[in-house]
Length: 295
Image (tube, rainbow, N blue to C red; front, top):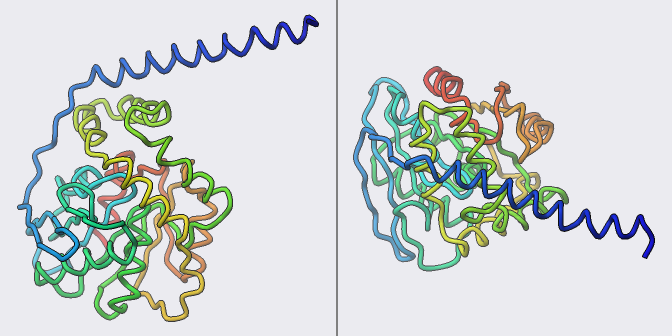
């Protein structure tokens, strides 16, 4: 065996061993943080449906401004995605758990139309009119589907956070195909992401650790990733939007910032950029809170 080949065979196990050691260190650091749910205002409500149930948090706030309907992203729940906003925002808020997420139940396969139906049911159940619809990540496609079904006149506005009107780009489709593996509980990618968030926000580390315990089961991750891979609103001739603000996460490594900007331009939305990764609500809560309070 040549010296170069022998060296190569020696490097592979050494590299794998080093990667495993780093993963174990990161895992120990993550597991050292106690997980504690934040104390949030409002009340939890349940709506029975033919396919399961819809759960949402209702928070009473300023009656003179439109309510906010907060739609969470992939692998989250209403509380785990929006807790920094729920705790501080003065506006009335309806925070939905999408089907199969949080305490919402789902007896069939997840789909974006089904998720939009859940959002509509929660709005009707809460008896609110002309709310501002807010969608983060996967919540963007759910919100766009809701807008298409109900029409722009039903909403006072739409705020899109780190999202897109299409998820069918080859690179993004490949990433979403791998996402259920990468984002499975205690996967190396997820452990590294959680550790970075814990380091960045040590004052709320226990809440961040709790939010990672709220992730849905692997089957639902598969279904939601598949639904996202098929989503493309560019051909929706019947899509009309109310006043729309597109918030671009400038440091996003999940959904490229230029992709987010292209989506904003495509629908003629106002655009604002925030220095944050994809988890913009947790990484830049003050900026997101300011945007939602003033919209």
